Length: 337
Image 1 (cartoon, rainbow, N blue to C red):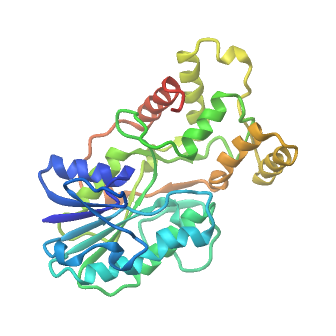
Image 2 (cartoon, rainbow, N blue to C red):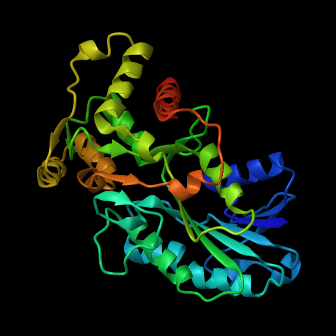
Image 3 (tube, rainbow, N blue to C red):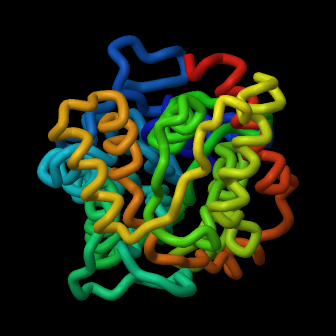
């Protein structure tokens, strides 16, 4: 087995590479950086064959594709350029590799869009659904492109949940959820959309990496959810843990009187945020903008079924509550730097 990891410098890709090294599996990383390291090659997902020289990759048997944009605040055209359109370039590359057996595409569990209930490990309906942001939409479209292909190699969609840290709690890249916690720490989050019982699905990058490497072996299904599933925490508990850590690391934080966020309809949340922005309140408006990129998902309670993923075998990871607590510790101690 020789694995080509496209996007190997990213949060997921680097985790996959660490697991491959642990199991002594040969791999080559493809990165967008100007100066690739010894075990890496330079790629550009906007170019034919993703900017890779297929002649130098003829012994590749598996591809893990984890490149692209993870921004929630870009236009749909921008996200399609980086997340959807490269899929045909990926297929073009794959067709030129004679030993290729499997392509694993790293997607998101939120490619289902704004729907409620149990989200199963199956292809999402092709009918039009709304999305919380353009990232989700572009990933949904990318899945469709790949699943429509008739190939000699297997295509697997690995839908991952929200990665908050590695197993130690360390954050490699601060995203919307980390910035939202920072605004909460500063007392700037007074309202949230949805219901306190809505569950928030959170995982570590290490868990994602281990599961993706498991998918490299043997015959597998087409779609898997790498999520916390039934172990997901209610948002009320998530916020409670955060407040506990804030008080633990800064005694007297609760005494400052920062309010616990109230829950409201999405329309009320949006109206309040837009009012703050129109009034020129940059600080509170900034908190709203950080939350708004994904907040609508909180109004659509869901559980991401991971039955097929669990059949791959056991993986040793922290429980979700401990993982989240350790991540908050990391953020506060470093002041989100």
